[in-house]
Image (cartoon, rainbow, N blue to C red; front, side, top):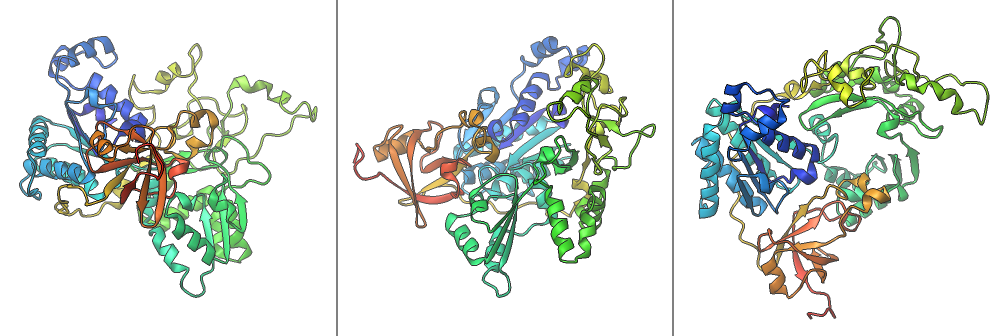
Length: 541
């Protein structure tokens, strides 16, 4: 929401169209409605889209983009720079230094990066509320450090700068705040005596690490237990598989990319053999006689224990009302009055109406019988008002059009709970990318459909995903004597994979892009260096 007040924006190293489509939509909406002195003078309200657009479109775009390859936002940007991750980092560090001399300088800066950096810095110097967006998709820590330096340099000038990061998965920020340890430590632990059981919670290890490392880890563990809702290569290698509930069958909390904890509630009742992951763990702890089993008995008790034991989550219990919350002595009805025909659902089996399922973990009831007014925003089951279709009824629940919900937006921000003293700046400025002798840099490229794991589980959605490919620049393709569709082999650290070629005009020479997350590329975790080899017998050999 802060984005609508911005007057300049830098997207560094992130193709938000493919990694965060809703953020892409917000950027486009911001470009259509961004603050404008003439608009403010005429006092044109936000809802007057035609008048706002007519004025805003007369001004040059305040959006600057620097990514590995071309993006769909490039056409609405004032500047679109493409380069290797190290060069993107150098551009960010250079902008930060121009804004604040205390930030590290970038040695041996090329003319094009220096020119782009001066142009971006000049725009940010005039801005009052600039925003910097970055993320993890290109696999470079220095890209994120450079983005942070730009934001800190803007703050040192007294500007109200914003900094946003795109997280790779829905609860990545929450896991980061928990202080999790790297998977490599677990893989190394199996070499120690006394450790022979691995419990894998809702994860396919083959998507997280090199195939050979996972095979070795699973082979050294005498017992492998998988708790998951989807079959995977890891579950097929397990001794025991416990069926876990999906997000739609459970109650929990997610932390989004801004660190806001938002509660989600069970929609469907669980099958008899399916249980929430925390309940499986509670049962296991109970069988072992561990006192922690009591913490898994109900959701509120578990949330309170997490808030007590993990300082970063000390406000977790404030994300939504507890299960004992009532209005006029009633729980909030999940179902609308249109669900009155529910007695017919089981009429083929029994003429008696079964009681609604019990939900001890929330203040919601699986029925149309309950409180039907305006509950607190975290407990809103639907947007409906008489005479309004559901989407349009949203305005009846807001303080004003495009404004917050009455009673405040749901969730609570956790970032302030774990604030630490930041360094003055990051100083890990990488050298300029110059290619490698006999090798190329392989970087990941994301797609809306295919890169996310579950998007390949539905045939209709999977049909929108691209076929596996290896992307080359036109000059690299010409140098290798290959065209689009020709096979090309990647050789890296004992692993050999062959993919058809796709020529990517915006790609820099010496770089290769590989689609992230597709079944054929699982186990390949760019960035890494590789050799390109034409298979024997192809038409160019």
